[in-house]
Image (cartoon, rainbow over all chains, first blue to last red; front, side):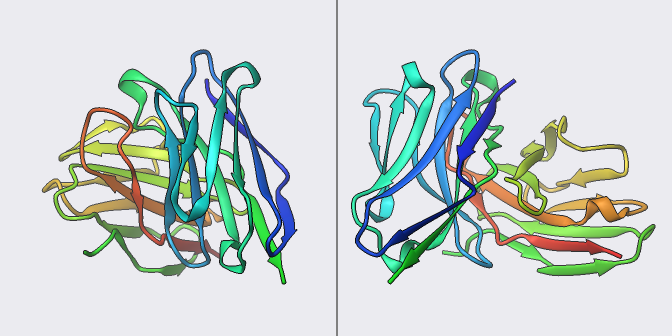
Length: 115
Length: 115
């Protein structure tokens, strides 16, 4: 069975500071990996995903994530936080092959950005 | 274009009552998913439709939960004899089809409160 651990349920940064949201997964084989963002009263929106190929993945809004197989990690970063980045962020995995539709989510990390 | 819509946005019901939650996917999307998000948790997979058929209903918690998609478009999640533990946000998502981990587009959710 797959699982996702997001370290830190709440991360607070200053505007302009580096954003680092941590995600580790447990899976018998390297899964597909995703980061979603959820703004209040809105649906989850895909930020980026890793399926194959280059391990550094660039997404929308200046976010990127690096798949590190040896560390079973897929941490999300952004060099400079904006106030508009304040939201909840979810890391998710899915299996390869026939089960690639089933997303398993972490518990989420709430990002606050201070002026 | 229109995204995934869910109705109602909020539903309050008494313990023991029956409820129906509706999902309108993005037009042309053949795959549809239901997830449940409890307070402080990430979304949890409930069921996946490919076309009209439920391809995977392994996430439904018990036989009080049932979902249909009779014409391969709109889906209804039905909960019988609701319990207070059913209180959660129910999310619907759709994607373009099979093959690869296609992006799932999420609706804003229906917040169900069982009193």
